[in-house]
Image (cartoon, rainbow, N blue to C red):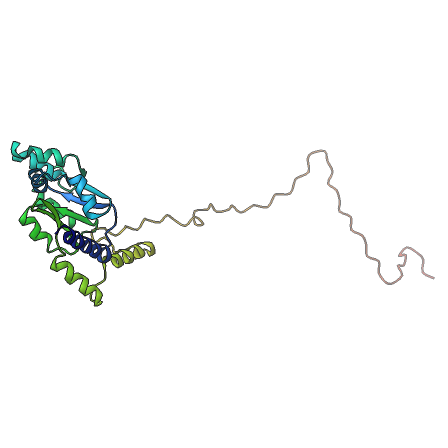
Length: 249
């Protein structure tokens, strides 16, 4: 029975690895109900999870799950001590905690982009998880940890991808990254258009006009200085110059 369960677990893990690109270390979100069941059945989660998944794991929880155990009182004090040992992932309800089931669903979103495994005994939470494709689900039954088979939503999603009706999550991420590199991302609808800055005047029109230079007046001769005559050379005429005082013959 144990060998058959391990084969089934290996098959389910390879399904999520191949179709939804799950990689080590596997991230497992744990809530208080799973810790309480493990404590009751004497299951060491930290030791058995890596053996079951045959790989490295990271056990984590949220602040809402811890707060829920605090409010439930002393009966779940042991489960609270176990849950406090795990990494606390930041959720959006730090100031105003919500029920753990709602918090875990919000961490997954519609496509489980961070590739979380979920470990819970909450039936209302499991029904919501099965509607999200690509969410592996752990629960405890008969003193053992069991990885549930892929949900119908996961099987339908894989089939649509294979038929070409949908684009896989990895292809969506690569397309989104290419758009961001090329600057083709979606514009933020809330972002207001930039106002055009008022342009200043043309710098060429701001240049000062050059003053026209007035001609310098001729210098008047000072007192005591004679005005020089301008001598002009006589032009030699082509004929012979006669002396007007010479007597005629």
